[in-house]
Length: 202
Figure 1 (cartoon, one colour):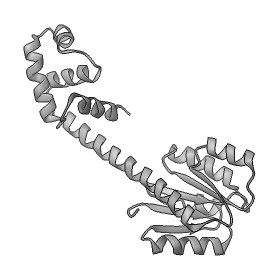
Figure 2: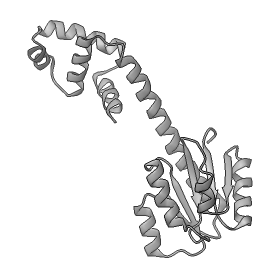
Figure 3: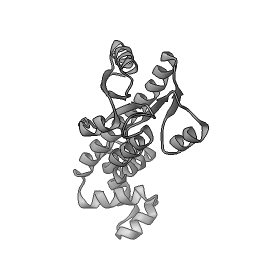
C-alpha cells in the first residue's frame, strides 16, 4: 500500500483526524481537506491517488466532488464515499459514477481499510501497466522500418503467409523478421507481443 497517496475530504474534524491517524499508522501517505472546495483549491499534484469523501458538506457536496475528480483524472483515481446520510438512490447513482464503495457512518475501520487496499491495488496495477507500455514503446522505437511493419501486422493478427503477401517478401523472410521482432521486443510469445501492441495503442 505504500507509494500511493490517500486524500480525505470531510468537514468532520474527528473523522478526518481518525482516518489520517489510521492510515498513517499503516504506512499510507494520507492528507485531509475540510471540504471539496478546499480540496480542489489545493489539488495535489500526484498521478496516482485514492480519495475518501463525505457526501454532505458545506459548499461543494460529495457527489460533485466525485464528478469533478472523474473529469479531471479520467477515472484514474478510485473514490470511496463515506456518509452518515445514506440512501439507496444516492448510493446507486454514485456507484454508476464510478465510486468503488459506499460506506455508512459510523463505519468499521477494518472494512474501510480493506476497501482502501483494493483501491490502492488498482492503482498499483495501473502503474505497472503504464510502465510496461512505456518500455514497450521504447523497444518499438528500436525496430527497423521493416521490423515495425511485421510487428504491426502480427498485432493485427495476420499470419506469416498474409504478411508475406502484404509486404511482397517470402514467408521465410517473414519468419526471420518475426524472430527479430520477438527478440527486440522481449516478447516470450506471440500473445505477449500482441498485448504489448495493444497496451501501446491505449
